[in-house]
Length: 263
Image 1 (cartoon, rainbow, N blue to C red):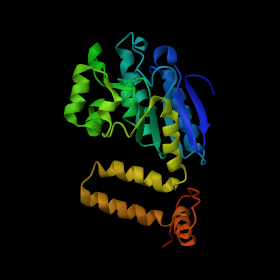
Image 2: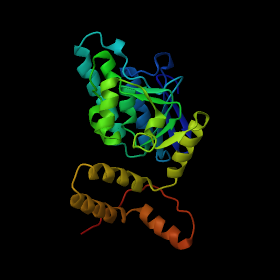
Image 3: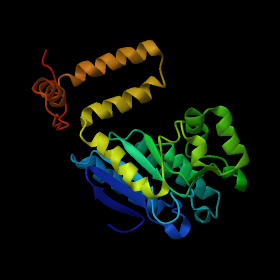
Image 4: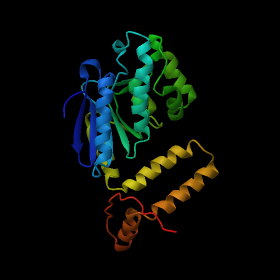
């Protein structure tokens, strides 16, 4: 598939590669629509277990295409559309990985902040960059970036507009794995492969629980965790996991939804 987003199946992972290399993969309505279609495909196909976001050419994504906003009135509509796509990525029912090379700036950084795990090339750079053009974040940096790297480091990126190397963020929640440049795809494939054989229902539930746990108190989060496990125990994946453990073999999960218990 060609266009603003290249779609590639690699094992159980669906790679969605932003494909506006002439503009450092800057975000436009067309690219967002194509990204949404890629997510539709990933969500509809049961054998796709992981989504990978990447960029074509020299960069991951340099943010929104500022030339798309000749009039201030155009900004609000675009922000709603980009926000809808980014929020969907953050709550997507399958793990989402970003494979970052080159620059991830402004909206490109905000896209990275929506994914679950980040594999960054050693030469990759991260920048908020909005301050360089008299702009403000509009796709989540002021909320998600402090949660990843702490308020002080987030303010440093936001206030200065400086592009900092991925090596500066190794060991933080912004960079999960720091890869040598020539091993970015290999390391990303390995990470995706390590999740491909896990229970799709289990991973989706874990993702929801972590997100909910960040927004609630510990007691409520623990109760919710137990409730989800009880619900998951009615699924075919739970039964398969127990059976595989008993039979000393690798489980084969189907991702079938739990059956409703009749009263």
